[in-house]
Length: 358
Image (cartoon, rainbow, N blue to C red; front, side, top):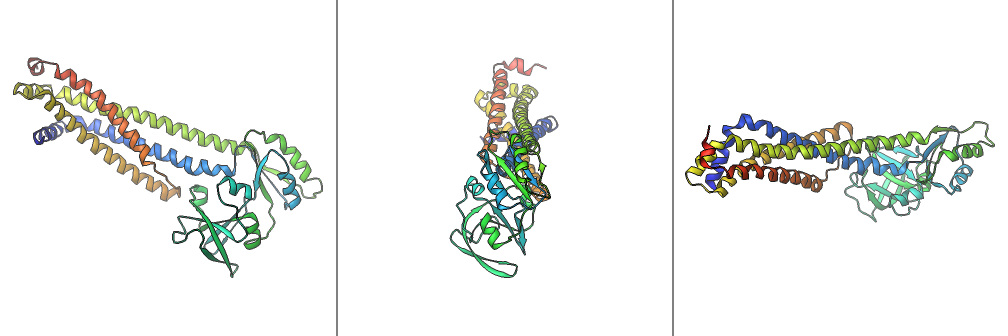
């Protein structure tokens, strides 16, 4: 085996100028696979996941102070899934408090929260655990809360905001953080409902006794466009993933095929001195393995560095699914190697005279 290793390395060094194209092809294919799969997974885990707060049939209304009668009317509409105040957020010193309605907490698989309960971002409160009490100072007043759960914030729109993230119930936010009135309300309808059908009804009812009228601030089309953009990004990344998969297989095959053709004379000499077909096969297999591993390793390292830069520059939480990426890369390599075996078998069937023919 040591002899096959030596011959394989010798072949690589002698043909480095011709092999470099395939090497960079494998590196690029690995880079695209890693980047595409990671970004696609990150979008799914962060932005798409967080769109549960917006939904596909969502409107934003506002312009005047909303009261409990307004909220009760909207929540009484059977096709309304839930509603929340987008500006129910406040920073106290280094803590960023957000209030969520019970319906949204339930959809996010959070427990039902009392006024003194909180849910913390696990990445920012690593020293805490469920059941602990935590002290926050709100307007210099000391308040104690019970930790009911943890979550990991992945949405880049939220992680860009400075502060340690704490979630309370809507009532907990009102009683502990801020009792101010809100002028904006996001209404999320059930997915199979056309929210446009309710816009006139809601505005007519809410504005019946108002001097300063409420208005539609964002139409459902805006939120649907966000979903379409994300769907387009996912499709684009999927296409890139497929193309890089095929390209990786092609370049892996190209390494085998080109090296076999270029080394016909060497194969003929090896056969002439009595080397078996299996040993010749191992030489080219080891040669390809070295090229593949070096290209894949550099491609992965370049991808990790690039993703770290994206995460730090754009404050986007990158989630890397190593198992899926490893499976794709391994499948690409296997595909290329299997195609390369065809070339090896063809060359093996040639006689010594044909192999040594100039």
